[in-house]
Picture 1 (cartoon, rainbow, N blue to C red):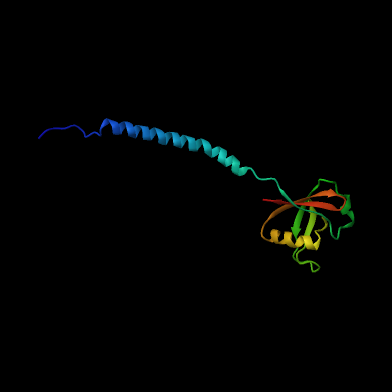
Picture 2 (cartoon, rainbow, N blue to C red; picture 1 turned 135 degrees about the vertical axis):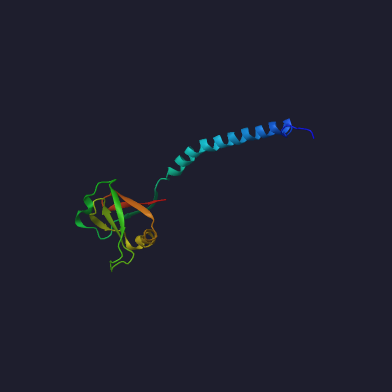
Length: 134
């Protein structure tokens, strides 16, 4: 019975295996380096999309005193009998300025009912711009 040392794979396989390990390590490093940039890219949001430039329907008397560029909120109003698809326009403090015109509010109210994020801003006396955030 002969005593043999440990069985070893031929040298070429060791070298190939070593090369394979180096490739795996390089790939791992490359992927790890790409993760922070992918995370940053997912945080970048597209600019809001202008979907409407309109007037205020049923404005309250003080609504025309708003400053151009002032941010506004759009709130869905379900209990207004005149317009079942009503969308109220309010200041950030919650002061109601008026409503979107019924014909234009019809589509926007459906988007709001399904959770769409919107905003608006004053563009002139009694006029607003409605933005959709994607």
